[in-house]
Length: 295
Image (tube, rainbow, N blue to C red; front, side):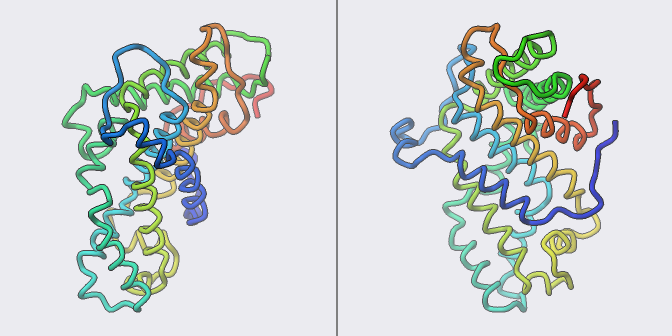
């Protein structure tokens, strides 16, 4: 089945809602430093264990950021920051660009983000350099989980188990184990830095003064104009990012059950099923047959 694309461009409210979810995935500073006092993102031990919920939530936030990176959002803002001295823009827009320039030391540079996303998810410009990384299994396993969720449909807690429900538990456990192996326990420390970086970039491109540079008013129209004729399909990329994040948040919510007896299948709420279907469609992947009563 081809991707289900909306003709209307996405609004910035969708971005901000997803970023709010990303912020929830960031650990409290004191807790994060207690868990990882040297601030090292150490690899997980080779034991096949399900990742902790906080690691899976962080993976969801960073997956959203990785796929949003493909829209060219940060690339466009990087150009504006470099050229800020030559741009004829209002003082409010200039102040935002200057603030971003001052914050550069605390942000992840483009090459650092590329290596991080390649390691975790095997996506982005650096992914080709290490095709055999642990992250290379991430999206195939996410696709398997999304297919299993759609085929299973909504299931309440304690619902009678069957083959479709067992397939969800198996696919979820596989992704949770692989995600933890690729991430390591310190991955949540990157979330607030990336989330803040994206939030500032969205604010800049939403500024009317920046839009006026290219004769636009809306956020996505401004981004498209800045990127030129090779601008990507923002709607599709945002659907991949948001739906993938939602599926991973569900995975984090059921992580404790997945770490228990192998025969236990977690509850499957409607948001997990609809997000899984949305991710598959946005990726251009076929939906599996839906069970009767699917919502």
